[in-house]
Length: 220
Length: 220
Image (cartoon, rainbow over all chains, first blue to last red; front, side):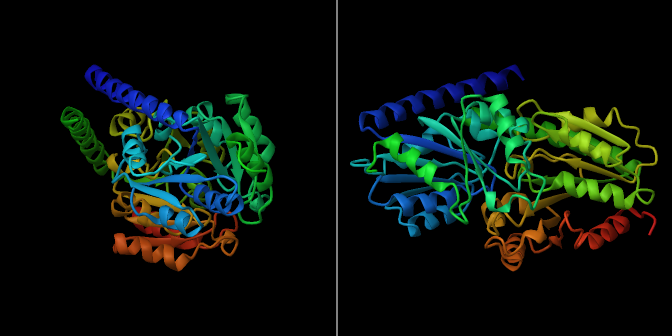
């Protein structure tokens, strides 16, 4: 058991080393990087589809889309106007790691890119342990998932800088309370920036777009 | 890397050994065991709450509820009438393993129990690799998650015997197609028994109850 822990630590510190290289590489090119994490089906891809459409011509976005299997998300993002989209199929692994992202970045021309968005595997547990060289983790939940998710998956909320509550159009169809979700999350991490939005109706998307433009120095 | 794989294999085979012991222990007492797996927020706990209420006095159910943090689910299940409920807090681990279940079973009096339900950690990836000594895995998704989940998390669907599509009351509020979800799942595992239901309205719950009664030889 001691052996196992020791080796996991080695794997993680190797990951951290690679993540630091990614971070340096992106900073040199003034590329801001977000690592998007959530349960399967919270709406990471839908949010990115809308965001690509809304910010076309204002922020130059590159995307890395991770999935256990299929390139579905990468295909959706390309269709939504993503010019630079690299899929990563983890082939069973429950998270992206810095090595996979390094390989994906080797195939991306970062010239002129303002924002790199990494869409992680749908999983609220494992991806929290892997630094991918991002500037911030963005954690999403949807209003159909239950407002106690921050308490149940605290590590992810502790390590995220932004908390997005998606599918606000479905409020009232479950017992989900926006207020409780916000409170539960802020109790774990008071520094979280919270967005409440609906990718379906478009409600609440503008503050998210404005924030991305401010973050990347994009065209207002 | 070779070293890491070797050790993971050892961990798994130790898990398989413990799972075989659990399976034997439950079979001796004629206890049927289901391992419920899904994303966070698909409605495992809600389904179990309804099921406990509906089958009270007909099937004697014991429950093991796993969570990364909090005993929220165990508390909900006890409130719903669960007489025998054991929480397992994994403390960060992304799945239950046979060792945790063994420890939980040591504190459960199985006399007269017909059905043991293990509610796994909300995660569609990692729990697929861990045999907990169950007779069957039951995988849930909800209609708000997207109908391509079977393709994206094939291992879980391949290793499950039952596929439950929950939140059918929210159909029409997203692009989710019951037919596509069913087809995607059956393409991966043609032997899946499929239930389509809504824990909120109660629609479709009766066939699930009937199946559980048949499975356990409970009182019709």
